[in-house]
Image 1: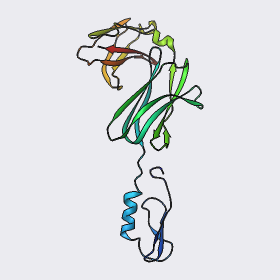
Image 2: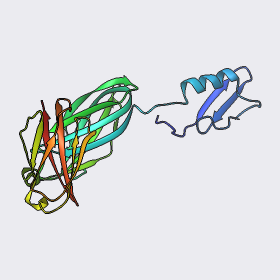
Image 3: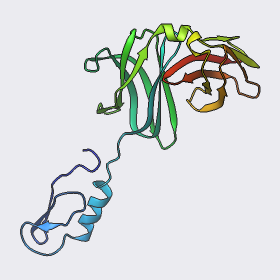
Length: 235
């Protein structure tokens, strides 16, 4: 039963005898036969055991990032109840989905948890993704559907070197951006923005990376409606 779902509950009190029923959670109780209010112990049992039915997983974020030759999916949960695993599903038309991966869930949690999955063989063009969250008892829910447009040509036009690196990274911009202002951002593995630069027209930019922890990052270069993304590893 989903949280907030309307339902009909009937309780029989043999001591009266009287049947009581209600329409929605904690709406006004009404006797079917007899009179009076529902006994307090029955109402307490209903309040404790029946009223709050939590969603199994609170999903706060689900995005897709186009990398050089693959697509990275990232999602975040704020809480989990009875969460067995996530099945990552892919579609070419937004209607017919098939599972392409499985990520173990965290069971029960009240903390923020980050997940990710790499699609190593995305379709050229539009790719549709959704998550199937599965409980330990087999019940499941679907996330929203997201789309990622995969075009190798765009990512190949953006060059980053050295990569891996430790102190700096030089970005060679695509020809289409060399005469425009660009906004360059660096995101860590969890998707958090850790660096932002606004650049005047140029064909290359150097990012100083000293002080950033080692790990997997993505460089995003934006100008107008164009966005280029490239992975970066800091050692």
